[in-house]
Image 1: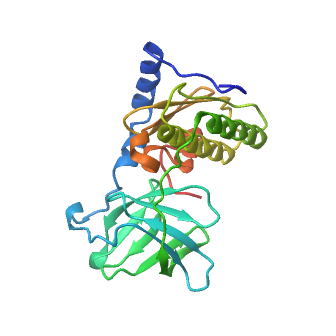
Image 2: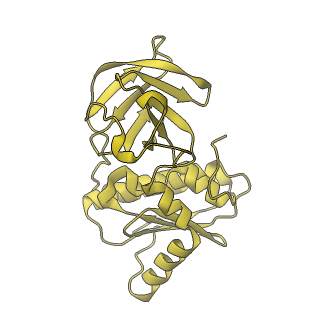
Image 3: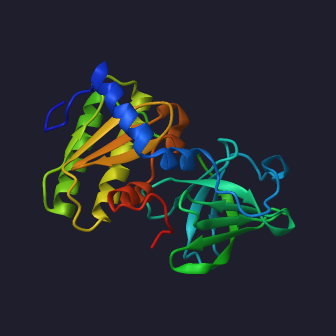
Length: 256
């Protein structure tokens, strides 16, 4: 690739990077795949399902609008209006049969009652606000990208990362990918740029993205290692908050 975007690592190099991710950040990979269990929580199979598919929701005053996508199984995908990131939430059982959807950091984002009512929680409204369905929406799936489009996106990502931290950041990605994988890898790079921007005084100068079976993130000196699993869609890449926490030395913790 041009503009400083590197090529893939094959053979021994790829194995070393994969091993570093697996050994350095098992908690992150596990957090991406399993919900955080609450004390005395009911078994997962007793969770009350909500309507499958994707729908648009809003609070009565319209201050919070979001798309909730349950078409992917137990994990829920949520995208808030004005936020480019698609958040992956995991459900646990709450009182009275409610489902409580949490981010990988343990932050409660949604509560769905057994009757289908939804309460949404944001950084500016920790007590929650009721939300009602406005209509159906398209599922939240990563877009497929051709090679040329991916190159263009990465040039923009690298430029934004350089401006946000005041130093050049080199992104290295696999040389050959399907359009579907390219979409997930590009989204992972976007999340990396956001995470770096939220990490003050970061010394990261290189971001290496590889493909594996599960999402993971680790820091090695000035190199950020990110593993993505394109077959899992948005759930197959670390979130910006997970990347920020690793860069700042916090494997997990509540969002600020």
